[in-house]
Amino acid sequence: MNIQVLGCSGGLSGDNKGGSTCIQLNHNIVIDAGTGLNQLSLAQMHQVRHVFLTHSHMDHIAALPTFLSNQYGSEHLPVTVYAQAHTLEKLKNNIFNGDIWPELSSMTEGPEPILTFKEIHPGECIELEGMEIKAFAVEHSVPTVGYSVKSEGKHFVFPADTIAGKQLTEQLNRLGHIDTLMLECAFPDELLQVAEKTKHMTPGLLESTLKSLEQQPAELWVTHLKPSYEIALRKTLATNPPHKNTVVL
Image 1: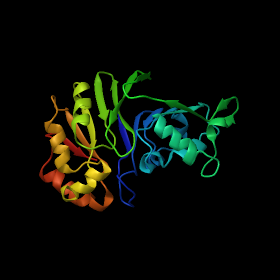
Image 2: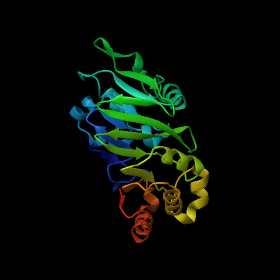
Image 3: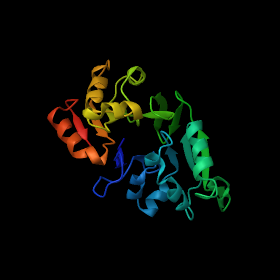
């Protein structure tokens, strides 16, 4: 399994790495469709057949409309977008509504539609391309799922935007051994109240989450740093890494 993080920023900045959240599992499967999706060439975009969304927030769906419009001319239609009912409803009503963007699920390129929507539920596991992709519920300000991905004997887990607490701990413990855990850290500790209100992580919350786990992951990837606090967060995480194998993306 060769995970490519195309985008991991918690915001929009001229110097962030790749843009907002988009994780490529292989040539035709991605998790989330933030602005990081723009790291792919047009030919590479034409290879993407499956998009797994974690939730409806803009930094995780921003590139989806224009990416889908780029699928005209692709030989591999349709693109299937997997998401919870809440996310699909918001996409259909607020984005693909004919005013903000065309309703692509009814448009075709030859005999195939450009887009199909598939509702996914927490606990559901989908097998694609030799991967087991399992959704699990996490606590955020809107209905959100994380994804557990198993392939070639490796286990990658991305809980998406979330906050420390009983629900996250229980979900991660149920997953067993994790090779790579990709957790967010959006705000510094002094903005704990903001993090709690918006259901995001701080370095302190990140550390408490790891301490609550029955098994430690082999590696921790820290993601979703807010650009306004990125320098301070990187300094804190470098001075006091929450895990012995910590990579700050």
